[in-house]
Length: 470
Image (cartoon, rainbow, N blue to C red; front, side, top):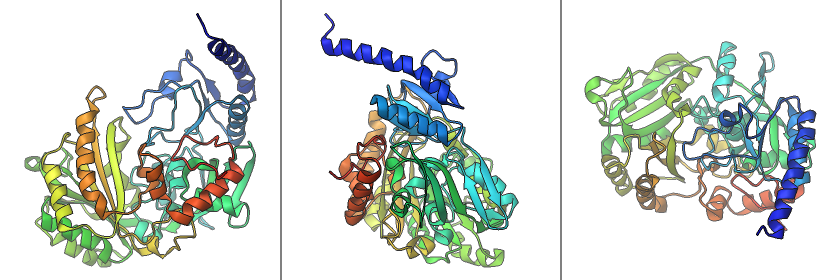
């Protein structure tokens, strides 16, 4: 016996499915549903843990397509999710039965070398921007992986290889074109919709769908960059932490405690050994950079050292593996210091991993990152010194995730008392309290007020959600 509510659902679905044809006619891009040849590929993301079947996927060709999809979802009460690069750690970019707005074809990058302004669509990746910008002697500080879509990366903040010299990606944002929950296409900047402009700089996807960013690029050509691989000892970890915040602003370090990969620059005898793989970028004078790196190199006899003059985009080669499909369990926090006990716990956990691809990532902050007023954007953790992430990765979708999650959570519970706050782009689905850690106090209150103004019905809810203030 089919219940009345089930019958009604079936009837409603038939009506909506029939009206998909009307939406399709409004689009310059594509509308994919189950049975279309490209549907299965289009629903895939980087995460092996997400195997979702959306009701339909709009592969947008322009802002008007995005607006049409938003209108359709709102009018028919459909869940709506947004995908740019598909790297969502919370696996919220593709949702079962939802209408997915896929921005991956919006990849245009246009750079004016005279004004140093770059217009960048949200489906473009860090790598898509870095190459053309470098050809003009310019760069934008973005994420640490070339394949992450700019749409999600930037609206969360954008912590990258030049964060100490040029701050976050959002600190270089001049304006953005946004499709609101009402289906309107607006420009947000310091002078137009300034409240919305404030909110999208760190507030994630809660307030609309960005269809184009305008950034001011920095004059960056060659950098002193590459990998310095050191043995994983307590003294080395402490030294790397100290040097990551003590050096000049031109130096940004990302340290990965991990097992040495079978990379060409790793001696074969060292593959599989625990190491601290430090990715370094120096943006200033090369001779000054060598002096700034000397204390780091003096911490221990290097396992490998590839640091030298390189074009800035080459630093992304070291994290190219992150574009491959994988599963992960991640916990992250900001911290002002790590105790000796915390360092010992990290090294002990690394000695007993559930996966050979486990990583503990430590980044030094400060510099330009810290000189922006915490109230200037929705990214509120400017005073913090360190970025600390426990990242457990495995490559087989059939593996039981429980042991991997237990390893992550076991180390996280030890480290967590020494941290405060979290970077929203490194949050999994960890609950409302963790979202509030990303947006403490007055920041959260202000965001909820802006949410009520631009998305009162919470259409954009598949994100680290901030419900609209009642």
